[in-house]
Image 1 (tube, rainbow, N blue to C red):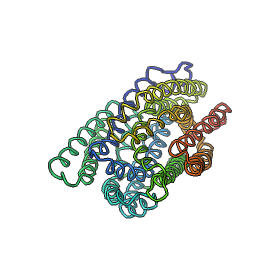
Image 2: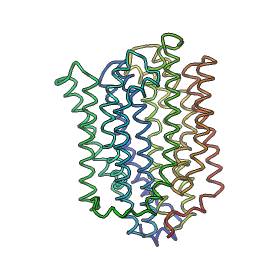
Image 3: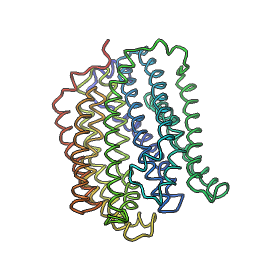
Image 4: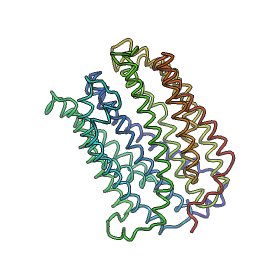
Length: 456
């Protein structure tokens, strides 16, 4: 769709939104499987918990990389809408090396500080060595994830979601195959090392395939030559969009780490009262992620279209797109949440035979129905505000709410009042609900209409 078509159009391109959403949705499912396949394949509750604890630290830092990639996606699509190919080309190269640089730093941090990070998380002594080993091995490959996130966002920005999805399929097949090879043939007595190596090698394959597609299909020049002198104005925009958003994601993930430490405390042998809480949290978190995958996919598809509409100056169409996406997301998310809650007992029965773990995890899935109402709106609204350039408000709001409502509330209801994991989940759900109301009013207020990311 060219700029002149977008600028005067009054009708949302629903077909393109669907074409964007479906491959992204499938790719997110595959990414989620990649994140959880290690836990399932080790076939051990303690090792699964160790992997989950390590992934909590890993996700804390990787989520910042995903937000930085989203910032470049926003700029690329706004420049597409504005018809500015020169600055669009500048963003590709700048964001790739910026993300890669941050990824290398994170890899070094994770390898060096895995033990103190996990010790601060109150990880029990019986799973701590396994968690540290897994985090060090997988953390060393974070820079590869940085590459994959950047390259996948470039393909999506150019309506090549199918190609990105194909790489995800290959990545997952390789990951499962390598896990099986290491687990059952090469390293049967060292399951943590086996699945960690499978994850790292599969990321090497994924990054290489994505790079080939970007270079040969998109014909992007990602060579270091031409990067300097830096295009400071474009780098500032990437930082302006990415750093506050990454800060919000980092803060949220940090609050989740504190909450996980609280859950570990609730389940500790010395003063805990729900010894099965950490395991229940591990399995519940695995299933919860499937609930909001569609919302995450359609909101990413919306970002691509929204960036083009805003770049072309069609704010009326942009507004319609956001409200329609919000309604669809809310309805679909609640349907998923209710269905999963109703069948959750059977699902958890496939993952563990511990009745106490299953019963507690099932309770969590019914609280999740309340949580997903707020999350559906938050995901869409935050991405809409960020795409429009209104990044500081949702960042500040999210930081304040997640620490006061979710984290402090988890301590009060989960530990002080001894509602345990259910109290923790209720506090997190209330945080999501409060923020969704605030963000709805913020978008409706229209301050985002005064922002302009592509002006000279």
